[in-house]
Image (cartoon, rainbow, N blue to C red; front, side, top):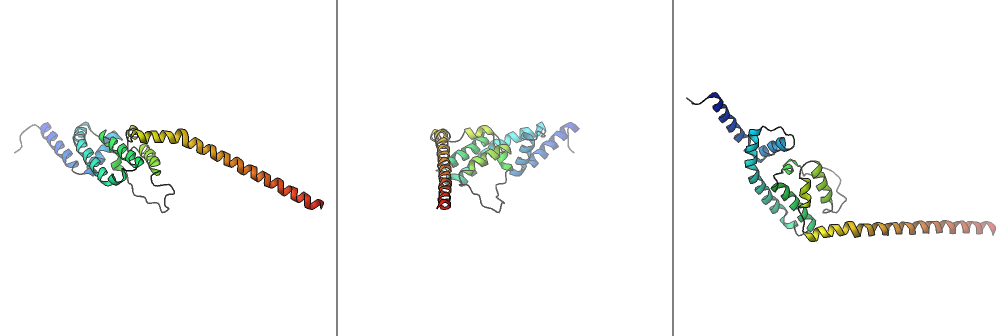
Length: 189
């Protein structure tokens, strides 16, 4: 026979059920999404989720380091990795809801590392990582390189393209003038 009030028994049963629901990473992911994104998680479950968060964060960071360790030699990859790790350390696990499988039949046209910026923007829109996490990753040299691209390289590139377009238009105009002169010469001869 079990002793205690009905209320105490109900609390113990609810606690046991909550602990059973958090046995897998998928259970954690579902509960986290209900809490952080949908705001539908009961307060009793939030404490259990917070207790698991630190361990899940550590595991995800280690797995990410193992999977991406060979790519940290590239500054943009290192920045992307550090952005994800910062999101984990802030207790934000939206990345668990992401399906990274590429189901499209056509290959990407971009340089593989250049697509990371677009992917990062999409991840923020889909609530997979925190927006502030993008500024956490990257060394000062990397950030200076990005600033240089925005302030010097891209404007210079656009200027050169404009100049090239002007030369092409001038050449097309000169070609039309020459053609018209040739036609006029042939008509008068």
